[in-house]
Length: 266
Image (cartoon, rainbow, N blue to C red; front, side, top):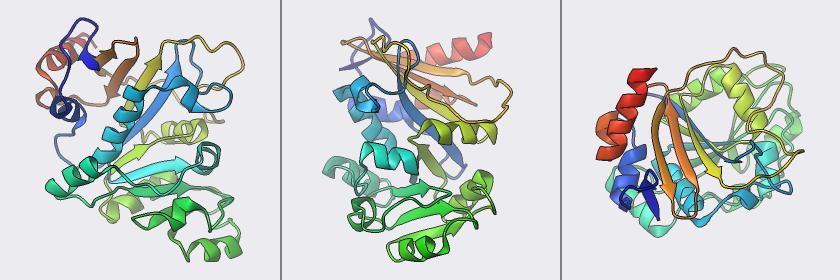
């Protein structure tokens, strides 16, 4: 059960979808989605599942439903055991009703291409996956992956994420959802490509040792990312949505008012 703030009314499915819809899908937008503990951990025992909940998993499904492409780093794909990216029947039906393909396109990012071509993420994909790499990646592995996915070479020694996002846009994949991991989010932030962050805050203290949601070697300057809304659940999870710009008309009434007041304060 998800509410508009702690004491607010329960939101319907249509209201939740509207809360995360964008005003114009033709405008490219990269949205990142992460779950974190109260003390900033991105995993428990090495996986994000220990921080999650049923409401969080349902929220992930909504965000995938609204995306054209789901962008994931190779390390996260391996650690989380991704299979073919297939939405549930109701979410597929919603997409078709709104003129979208049944499923978003799984897009893997890997400079080394340490991704087996016989992985279910490729062989069980309802939509042919995309692999984004660089020219320095192993040529033999590029050829093997090209049998099961579209391989895009963006950059020479490292993946050029700006070129990658542009290439996805040229394919009509303008609404991109990044699901991790921390190194990919850090690189996207360093390239100033993150337009929005949807952050689930789990009511847990994970303790020392876990990674943060962002990682890498970049020297990125701090950036403002205004708060768009806060939603909460009866089991004390928070859903924060921060973005470069606000579209109050796309939010539930109470959340829209909150977004406006926060944006004005910034």
